[in-house]
Amino acid sequence: MPANRKLRIAFQGELGAFSHAAATKLLGARARLLPFESFKAVFEALRRGEATHAVIPIENTLHGSVHENYDLLLASGALIAGETTLRISHNLIALPGARLSEIHQAFSHPVALNQCRQLFERYPQIKPVSFYDTAGSVKMLVKDRPPGAAAIASDIAARLYGAKILKRHIEDNPRNFTRFFLLTKQSTFPKRRNRPWKSSIVFTTPNEPGALFRAMACFALRDLNLTKIESRPVVERPWEYLFYVDFMGSQTDPKVARALDHLREITTFFKLLGSYQPTP
Amino acid sequence: MPANRKLRIAFQGELGAFSHAAATKLLGARARLLPFESFKAVFEALRRGEATHAVIPIENTLHGSVHENYDLLLASGALIAGETTLRISHNLIALPGARLSEIHQAFSHPVALNQCRQLFERYPQIKPVSFYDTAGSVKMLVKDRPPGAAAIASDIAARLYGAKILKRHIEDNPRNFTRFFLLTKQSTFPKRRNRPWKSSIVFTTPNEPGALFRAMACFALRDLNLTKIESRPVVERPWEYLFYVDFMGSQTDPKVARALDHLREITTFFKLLGSYQPTP
Image (cartoon, rainbow over all chains, first blue to last red; front, top):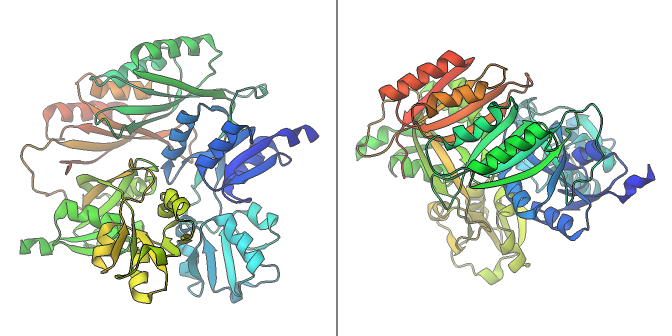
């Protein structure tokens, strides 16, 4: 599919990051990948047209919603064109030929190191060493070849940098999943048959009792199913909240369109972030 | 207040961590502080009675809810006895006598390094270096005295380890706040007059349309104000959700008690995490 080469996907992290794996799941392995240091730079690349798409993590089952990315998404005006969920599984990765018994330090991002505490309890000779990035630690391993060192990262990072997986699924908690959004400037993504639609919106309600309840009524009275609701305080204005809501249905469905019209009537701010078909 | 010496507060991180600052705000500077490596160890210390209280971060304005701590809280049976919110402000910290022009590397947790990108853009001679902990990087600085090195951490960490603040408020985003819970095994915390009450609950609803709307009605029909609502998917059971709800009022108020009875009727799981008076 040479057409896919026209896709240029911005993501945060080094090649081999979990966002890279999510991009591959969403758009296939042949799309061109553009790694950036920060989420801000990812949105900037999309805005400038350097990237046709962006893939960003939006929530994790252990660490919650990535509010920073909701903020950047709202400010950017980009649209959600897809969604997928990835199980975050860590691996102990070393240079080809290395043996587990020789390893005495493991490099990775501290969040990943923290998610693999049982490994360090079981192998006390292996010391955790903080590094700026999970996939970046594999890249460094292969480049600098520090003796007795390993890295903790995704299997895609091991494959990409030609390193070897010594131990798979070393994360303590198997319920570690991250949900990613695929973003575009203009939603022109091909529709796929027989896949359900989902929509994401953000709104604020007036600071009066029952305002959220009335907002919920727009969906409940039309039998539209919510799949996410989250309030977020507005830092500058105590007692005001942003709400993030996801629900099943597309903006092109007349029932959804009426629910959103109803919601616009009773909210002080409203934005549709996109309607999309999740990739299972 | 020598009585405060009887308080032993468990928290995650090194002395000087933001949880340490939150503990001081909640219980005063004379309580004994017990630092632990992991949140799991914090809950374990509370369970064993080694600690009388625990202070844990529960949500951050940039990074969302700390679901890991909600999980540990639910599993532990501990109660929320207090709440406070802290502005997360980072400082560039060095050894006494050091000058900004001599600094060529800054150690800290990668999350903190990421929150100070503008500093590294403005002073390109200073390179960020990942470390396992913010306060731990100040501790290391004072102990190992690496030449030309600084750390990024809280002002309390600078004071505690006898280091010097070279630059204050170096965080890019001033809207970085963390909310902390104070936990006890049994809620016997003194009540303070003229301070409002807040309660936190967790529940699951049956998997049927409008279930969340009916749960919200328990509050809306009694004019009880929600201050937080957040859904969280149950990993093992697609289409089932845990809801975290905070509202103004105490379980000892008859109107609140009736709302919670009503909620118990229509939920498949319900737990009151505690009623408490936030510390402003």
